[in-house]
Image (cartoon, rainbow, N blue to C red; front, side, top):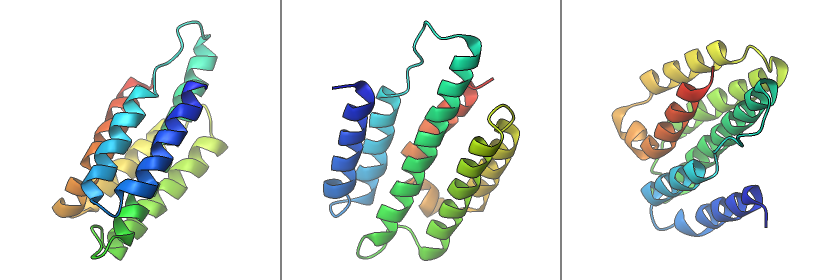
Length: 143
């Protein structure tokens, strides 16, 4: 099984089974699984490395969206509707920007990401901290 398929299977299992137990478990599991899946192959050209990193950012942004939605669906919601909507708006913008501007997406996405993190209340940041940490590390590695 390819690493990407394995990662997808692990993330799906976390999303399906861990959410009812605890929102924090989902966020931690997503970040742990994400970090294990994000290694850049050493034999890529610089252009291919940039494309790989952009793809990894897309995957992690998708995981952030999935985590926010899952946390919002818990009873009681671990993430408010307002905060979940903010996250989904950011993820939609980020995904569109990366697809539309593959060589110049970083500034726009980082600015929107910073704004999202500044506007979320502390409790929501705590719920999503592990996913945020993974995205922070990945964005720092993108040139």
